[in-house]
Length: 228
Image (cartoon, rainbow, N blue to C red):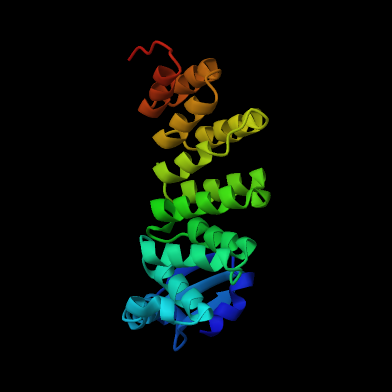
């Protein structure tokens, strides 16, 4: 898998139709790697029979197989557990694993950015290695995931874990700006209600211009009367 050598330069993944790739299985361009769906799923299918004896393989092989599994199917508990073991064993550095999760959660793929298992894995990683937490970086990943999948419950549940008294004002402003740009996203408004109940007057003004049930839900959550 030659593309693994380029993994450190990757920022996003896309699944591309074969006519774009031609005879290639993958292509890296401007930090975006594109895979053929046929290639990715055939690779995963080839590795499936190895899972029964995964612990007998070398740790480098475990790294490759578990990564392919998460690329092909997000809810793969054994793959996530293997990757935790690889991090704890020092085969994969915590920073490299965070980079992998940045790619998986921040890419325009069908299921990855709303995968509960991937978000829980990210939570585990940052709780175990809190020195990796950079607020602006985490907000950027949540923003990308919310963009790719509106009403992204798991992304916003993860965002709640980032809130501290020391950063509440910064997160509140970030969430408000996102809500203004995505009026219909009920998950964004629910998150805003959890971190800042003081924007009721601004929300009312917005509802007068662009009335939507998600704004009314925010007003209800912060204890305001809503008249329809």
